[in-house]
Length: 525
Image: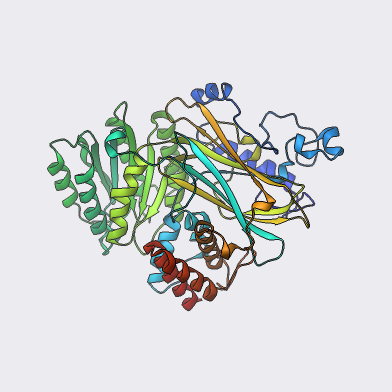
């Protein structure tokens, strides 16, 4: 899971062996699926479908006493490193994530004339907020594409790893859904753009769901209440609309009680052969009852393991508990997004949520093996909370990410190549479990150093969009707002011009909003 590695093998932080052991132990202790017998059985039947010249090591590869628990033996001493696994310092492993809440909340904050708190800026969520041009697989599972281009900083490149699932089929082709909506009706939700926004969008979604879908409704303020048990829509849409229309803000925010009652209601209404989800709509500002995140998170983890019920978090409000909502969704094997306008809400509840109903992959994670003969150092942009120990890549008991049909996941790396290096650059591999059988699968793709375009800003549209979003997030995370840690970072003024050009050339409304957000950040910085 090493994010930033140098040619001396120690990393920028030093004492990386101790750090790797500590992080690996912590991840093993917090992994959600540790007791799943089905996952263990599936792991025993796994087959390796990888290809390429720099294979990713399996967890059970014999290891010696080297600094990082790896000894390459005579082959490595003779310089034939491509016949064996790369040194662990040249591996990067992370769980897949399709959250977008961080970017949505940043846009809302900037629109109100404030720079977002750097702690709420997660670059991968900025990147994954935009449509990508990754190739799609013909069948189930993932496609893997890798491309890149040189930055304006000598010897540094941006390398993009794209993972994509097949497009979603017609709504009639997906499994039925049992959705438990857990709605925050605390006093703070009375602010315009919170509860009223959720009610409007939920009403629209109710009309678009199928007759064989079911909906339950739980509300919480100082206490939690099930106001609508699991109800098959069929001839009962009016009953669901009445329950939604009757919601009114009341007192404080007992988020713990809301989550607990929501999962109890979901378990009581659980239907076999359908997709069961809890959808939490809240500003996540817990101030009453059980406000301890770990306790709330453990409740979600237990229900996920025992009943396979996952969480979709929808954040609202100018004051928003971003960190808590993200942790809830991660522990609940789900996703988060953020809405601030009626258009956002309709997109989330009428477009995104149906795509989240069906799962293509469980516990999906990616590992990128950089070739030490060509790569001197690299840095994964974002995914700070989604890193996985390198040796756990094929341990299917370790929690990964859940991905549905029609999703793309993009990871961006800053990579410094060795002077004059030529040849194999990296191998990217994605591993996932079939959502029903839990059979593991893998797909890989190689990239060569000569595949890197001469300039990021002269590359294809997709990479330019990815770079713009990543540089924007990087600038917001830096203290001055005028260039951060990414090599070749332009100032916000130049980045605003780049975004304007992309928006003008594509007539993409999402890119126009990005350009406006960068312009506002430049004004405030």
